Length: 233
Length: 233
DNA sequence: CAGTGGTCTAGACCACAGA
DNA sequence: CTGTGGTCTAGACCACTGG
Image 1 (cartoon, rainbow over the protein chains, first blue to last red):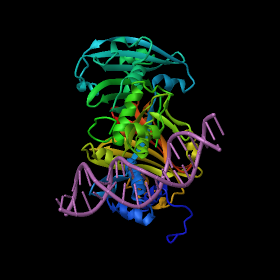
Image 2: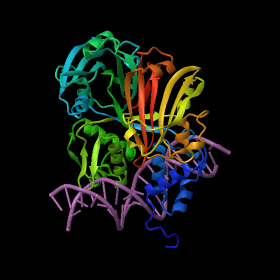
Image 3: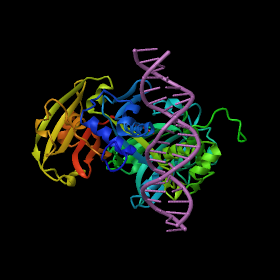
């Protein structure tokens, strides 16, 4: 070709990597506007679509910000984005090679307290379920969950046998939600369920699941100290 | 057309949502093969590229598995994928409206202990840095970090003024890594730095950063109880 | 070997937001 | 209003992998 001596035509991954390199190398410093898709397409000798694919990928990684008419800028504050896979509790335990166990502790209709994450988001009365998950017969985590009382099929859900965790994930659609981690001292009843001393540190995970802007379920999972949540960077 | 009365032509988001709906509705149960891109493109009356975009998106969310020649299958184990944005510590603190403060506690060349996450991955001697981050003058988190001693520019890095966190993120490229959360009882010296009682529960975040298969840095961040890490579902 | 997803193209139109 | 990214198309070739 008349262009260059490179062996293969650039694919979107090559373009992504090259742009990333230039950003790291400070050719395009943070906050700086980088060339338009059209310009880059010309430089790399490819279709604009291909450049778009590359830049979109970088935007998803948080390395650049893109706005119509505003162009593409290097992100001011480099952000590392970690991805955390959240499996069903049974899966999580069996993946470690342990035998999974489950016990329903309590279940009933209640009004959710407003002080739990997402608690203010519930429209109506809720099903409150407390359950215990076991690994090899030992208490592994306490599940303290509030579920929108109007979900279809909820009355027939067999929470004596299947964890709400599992039933919801497989039966109720959702569109998003939030999740947070914290370290706390175990509350007395939680400590008793987990069979640990009352002041022990525990790792808690609060998850609010939304369908549109409606709160479907809010759950607090409490793990014994020593449990680790892993994510990929 | 002979097809339907819908007002607008389907975009990739609509197709993604429709497929998601069918999966949730069990039209296509877990493990099942779903129609080819070509078939779906015909059904939705759009180009194959558009279907591809939709299915790729679902694959990134972990809802389906795709393999060349093997087709697209509904994932066996539904997984929720949470995304966690990890900002620089200073950013993290200033975003809460607080004033950021930083103090270097200790710095020196040491051999990393093998019992830290990623500790076995270091080839050579390391720079060991301990620092304290403040929010509004109060201790916020302890940073205990090991850095590959051969990184370019490391000798000149002004860790008395800028946190290693910040310097690394802005100067050293990386390709991936792992991250884990746990709850622990504060170690005595950590508790002293954080100005909390020695047995207090703390939230720890261990991060190992890789460039290729080389460990660039391993860090343990220790936060006081009550700190929350937030993620989007 | 053949079927399926992966990617690229050249062109087009649209939606949004900056000047 | 105008420039930029967002998306769609129709067609093509490629890469991988299951049978």
